[in-house]
Length: 112
Image 1 (cartoon, rainbow, N blue to C red):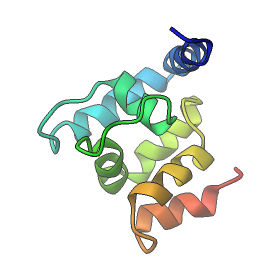
Image 2: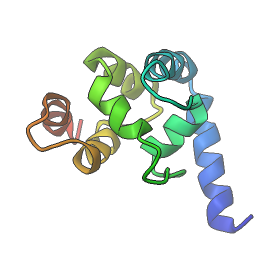
Image 3: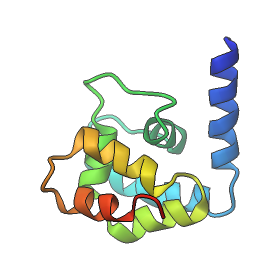
Image 4: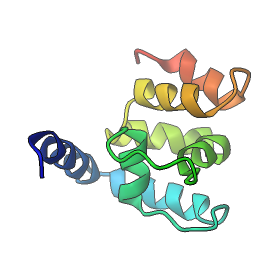
């Protein structure tokens, strides 16, 4: 494992260990896996949102998550410290069309 991979893995583990992060991710993944043909784990979703474990183009979990997630779920993930509004907004800019409600909502929260 490279030094960069070790740092990324440590960052992911630290985010998963934050109080409330697992609960928030469990809710998010539970909702998301209803829509996906192949289930994703809490670690896979968070790694993708943090751009630590990017998925191939066949895996649409980030797009589907951002498209379907309730705003409260996104807020819970940020409040837990697992991700920031900036990170979610960056992911939304890659995966959602510019007029999408969730993308606009996250853009409004950048820097918070």
